[in-house]
Amino acid sequence: MSLVVLLSGPNLNLLGEREPAIYGTQTLADHVARAEATAARHGLTIEHLQSNYEGALVEAVHAARGRADALIINAGALSHTSWSLHDAVAAFDGPAVELHLSNPAAREPFRHTSVLAPVTAGLVAGFGGLGYELAVDAVAQLLKGAS
Image (tube, one colour):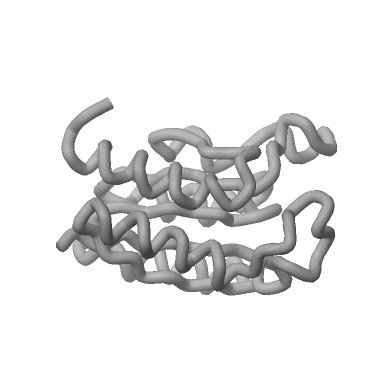
């Protein structure tokens, strides 16, 4: 089975409590379970890490090199600011998909630019919890060589 590393950035541990009008009422565990169920249908395994620390996410990408087949990254606000995470993802040899529960383009101006976008295969945004399923579906297709 192919391994997909799912990374969750700062404040995502508060999902279900934090700004439910924007992020919904499902918890991070709910979203991870949805990703795992979708991955199983594709014959993939999900390994999840959530951290509020940028360096821990960078280290997780480094640790995935040579071990994981793909990355799915919901880096939260770090998507717009973390050049170190950008560089780590650029050094990963496999597809990476950026994920957001909300639609950053419809929010505050600082969220309109992603520093991860140039080093990811694509972006799934604005679909709430369905985004986790869509991101896994996208990775599965990328791993099969389909576009």
